[in-house]
Length: 479
Image (tube, rainbow, N blue to C red; front, side, top):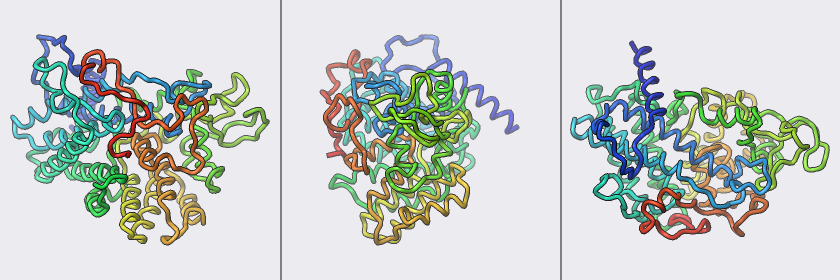
């Protein structure tokens, strides 16, 4: 029976993804559409598409963190040029709208698990969006034709709302019994496990509490308290492994194989892991990409090895030879057809713990969490055990609790959060203070980018309420 329920749920997901969702503030309402869709269908939609929203944002901001780079010189994605993110904005608000509806129907029916999941997923999507754009429509955004021009809530108020949603969602999920549980086959993140949802709620809460490290609100004790109720193993990770087609990073990798070029690895990320910057080879790199072939690179003949593309400078090899530089591979861990699409992981939680413990002057806990974060990340990527031991005992990594620094913690977290939007949050929190990290070539700004452009879809529909902005504006937690 379980096999058939999974098949039915997968078919439902395909129908949802191909049919599309209602659009934020869309005035073209279909009078024949149901106003009370099956709640299991909403759950399938919001769990699957939350992971896809993480991909949408990461596929954009990974050029700012220099995980990825364009092979084209002065590419707008690399150089902080104007970008219209209407698609990503629409995807976020589709999920937020369905979360709103799912919670409303759950309240009417007394279905606790659906209500708790809606709160946690709303917080995840809303915080991801606010960390890109700052102020957002929220408190007035889901009342349909009654208000087509909702106000933009202050970004600090959005942050506070996310914490309130998490607390409420956690509290609800802690009371869920098997009689309250939802359809496991429609939950593409935790498969109906309420205890797993509680851990994810606390993991996201720890992420958000740690995010305000530059403000007077930061409280390391509160961060560690959330960590203590969050993940304890990689089995707890919030991720999606079922797709209508394939993991979307696989599509990026396949595009490379077909010479529709995207997803080339940035020179900074490759140099941070191949030993060029930090003096130690990271065994996660072969799990991400293959060695580049020997050939002409930046005008010099080089042997086979791991080489990236400098952001903003473009392709460095001989014309029509892509294999002289590294890129996402369709058979590797992040970008194979069935690779997990991650939302938040045990490894990230361990680095949150390391940072908070370091700030609380608990050196031993900080160091233990730092090593645990590296180990969890490598285990997840199936790095061989002997390679893990070799890496975490290398003197560059195994510095001991008294020599541990925030820079080391954040360097390792940067690798562990590869292709996750939270990496750009970290970059801004640390003022891009990563060893040898520099502005991209041909940058259109004279300083690092701090926020994204509002989409044309928002300015066209609700321009009077869209705040003025600049890509150099610091968000409230980045002052």
